[in-house]
Amino acid sequence: MSTRSHRPAPRARRVSTTLALAALVAQLPALAHAEAAPADVVTPAAPAAAAPTHSSDFGPIRPVAGVLLTGTLGKATETVVNPDGSLASGKLGGRVQAFVGAEFGVAANGLKLRLTGGIQTVNLSSAGGTERFTRIPLEATLLYPINDKLRIGGGARYAAHLRFSGPGDNSSAHLNATPSGLLVADYRLFEHLLVEGRYVYERYESSVNGDQEGSHWGVGLTVMY
Image (cartoon, rainbow, N blue to C red; front, side, top):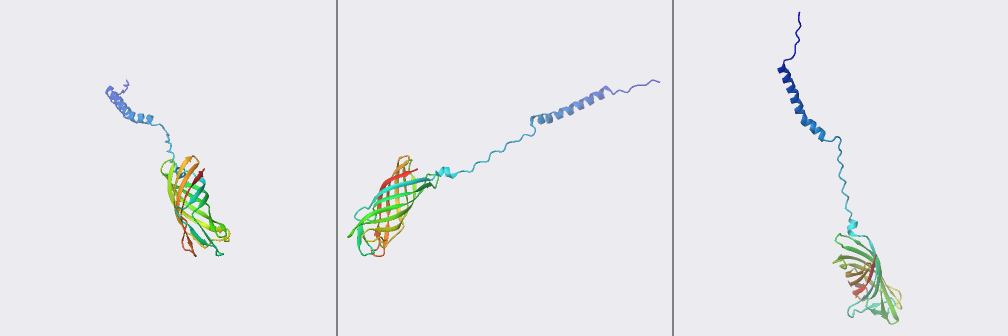
């Protein structure tokens, strides 16, 4: 009895091969995409933006000190009555003022605020000799730069601790200070040196003689570090 082996027909083999090739071709795009995309790629996070620092825009706090020669326009001579009844007369707006303080920025456009305290003194004449009128001006001034050298501004001032000393006895001579206004312009001569001009509108209240005129101009030098 003879045994006949069963082999697949040539046509069936061709169909099987064609189907296998078609399946492989269909998988090629997926394989190419898998090779192009690197595995476990970590995208670095963008660095956080630094918070803006306004202090660099406004500038550092700068100590200031200065001295001014002050005086009045015209004959603004006032008379004060001392506690002992004697009289003293003179111009209350003179003569020398010295101050110290600090200046710091308040806006990015260069606007500065200057806060100062100092002493201002002037001599008055009396029957017994010379009396000295002193006060402690406290000032707050805003200064705006016109260019890199010139600034203009204005502010407020209060003359505290009014005192007369001399033959009429140490006293406040019945004077009370009132809030005052001032206009200022300064010009930078060197890095740390400025020349300053100002006008102060100032009055004192007197329980004896009524209001006393203390308005004055001033010219001087300011040192800034």
